[in-house]
Length: 185
Image 1 (tube, one colour):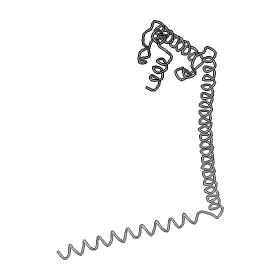
Image 2 (tube, rainbow, N blue to C red):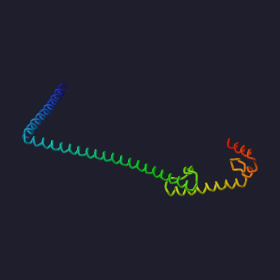
Image 3 (cartoon, one colour):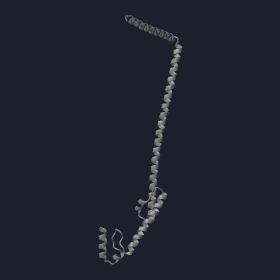
């Protein structure tokens, strides 16, 4: 058994020696291969590497500049869009003011109260005109009904004021008492 152990150890040593010899041969072959490069070859390889790295760096710089330009363009475009929105909002406000002024003028020309301007649609000239005509018609109808109701001698809804015929029968003193009493309420 000792014989076998010795043989085994001997085989392992020979395998190790072979591996070492092969490694040394490879190193000497590599040294010979390394010695095959001349200084001109090394200079050429270094120059080629430097040139390719320089090209790569320039390409990266160009890409960064393009990206910066795009970022600047996007920023400029966003600012331009924001300004356009603000201008449109200002123009819409000016149009609304002009329509309101026009509506107030129309109300005054037709003898209608200026408070009716709040009920008008000021989103556009045509919308304002149509809503003005509707409001005028409704207002004049309401006023006409109220006048007719007073002339008939009835009380106005929610007012409770005496009819015109009742007031004409009162003395001046009674008339002022009733009118002042109603105004105080």
